[in-house]
Length: 301
Image (cartoon, rainbow, N blue to C red; front, side, top):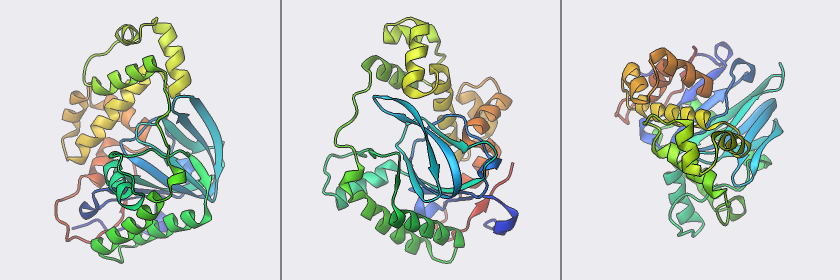
């Protein structure tokens, strides 16, 4: 039986996912002071709305540098798949947000349908944050609809397609061409992603780039915001997330992702996702039935 939602005043973080809408996950945090994220990335396209307060948004500008901006109530924020970022409170100032995590293949299909974009795959967003009162309000309204459990999955799927389809039709939001990243750094990042299940060393990665280890660390961190080792850990955590969604045992996932043990995996996982592997698996590993009500799942660690 689906978990009963905890009333809003008793829980400041909620997660929503439904097997009939496999292209979408949703998080809400009402008090951002309760969570802290190390710099990390996602497999998904992340699109959110700041619903209160202010936050420091650190993000990667591909092909250029890593930067920090202040975002506040009313801002829309976005992250493309694989882009390193972090959003954290400024001091002890409160802030709140909602964040949609969207399957890039699903969005690419909407791009092809609504923007006559026949390029094939996902065309990345050009902006990381912007002011758009209409879009902000639409994202907040859709999040409320999903959390309310008042509509059928089919109805909610239609509402998602209308909102995100209209967004995909706005060509000015998307890059016309991929940014030119430093070839050596791009090669190292791709190598880490493709071989994150192997025992990689800094010396080996430096050889891939054709530079010294110290030079690689400096250049990589300037471009990606994290060291090659931190990037490797992020890739392994993302691999772990995919396995946990399939309901695989945490201890087995930890070893398969080359963490020393379950405790090591748990520390790295929570540092990057602000939730433990146990709770993440509980709220994302859903039964195959598409007939259960779409309800929010509260989570606490």
